[in-house]
Length: 488
Image (cartoon, rainbow, N blue to C red; front, top):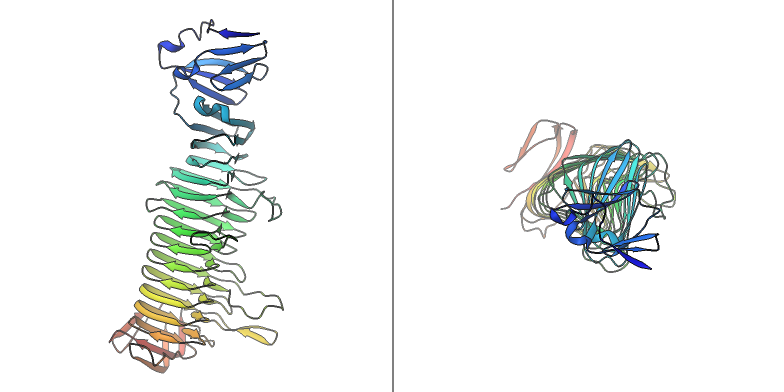
């Protein structure tokens, strides 16, 4: 039979007299129910207790307490320590949440019936902990001075397939462990993995240190908002950011050091907005990649740089299997479609053998900005083929319509602007320096001139026809070929 518990216990009789909270504690998980939400509690057959919409097994309850700690609706708080983790769930979502804690490893399962957005607040510190979440409704994940390291797998793994709003507060760090799993599983793909799309804001700092594969990996897009603080990716063996659909950066500071690609964006099989694109509109992006045949920026379709400050350094040799025909993917910026640059400050350097500063399988359109591209490596030979260290290379037209562009290609057969199609000087202020000459198309709207046998040394200023640039310190060419152009 059912009985109604009328709160006869002394600690509970005054619950409604103040803004008090009833805490149902099950091990390290607390369901915190404000007095206004408790209502009548149904006690059945001495085995269960129902409060609101959630039924608890009495044999699982550690204790029930009352305090005056306020409860914010639609929230789950996780506090980490080396002794373990504590989880506190607000009563309004308790019926939809199952939480498990093993030491400092926390698993949250959200019911498919959940139809309200929950904010997960993660804070504290643990050197042997993690956060794993499954669900099917959008959510917010707030990192509040969180220090979390998982020696065996990902530090944070979100498996909800929907939107995750990531808010970074204070100083945070995530580190993964030394064991990985197959890439085609939903296991350890990155230090921080999100199955779904994510939008990033908050003024704090997040440092991700990878030991196994990628730093941040997502199954759909990543948007960095204008007000974002700082994201630092440290030395990941794989890619710094490994993303599907698209990457869009509107502000903030992102610094990546990786052995793999800096930012690698793949296209989804189905039609999606901005599918396969990199879009940079603002902020400060710094990328250093050191592996073989790696790219600073890589995407499967279009790449648009509309603002911001970008610094990319690549090193390491290109390594290809015999079946592959060239080394075009060893580039600081690699695009398989149309590359459009319309503003901002762009500084690119490629020092590996056969490397490229910018490489696009489609056309390259530069409409504005301050752009410096440098390659310094030697020719890379593989069998009967070779790859030359070109500064800007395209399999379509290269149109230089605006901005200030200094392109310095290696003295070892490098070309400042390399294409089998046309280089169009249509209004940009341009200086192209290389071991081989660049010739602008006679259909260009602005005239250009060529000079040869010029001794170009790093730190010097080179001036021709009213076009002047300070040469980067890393570049030298004792017998350079130069092309210059500016708006008539």
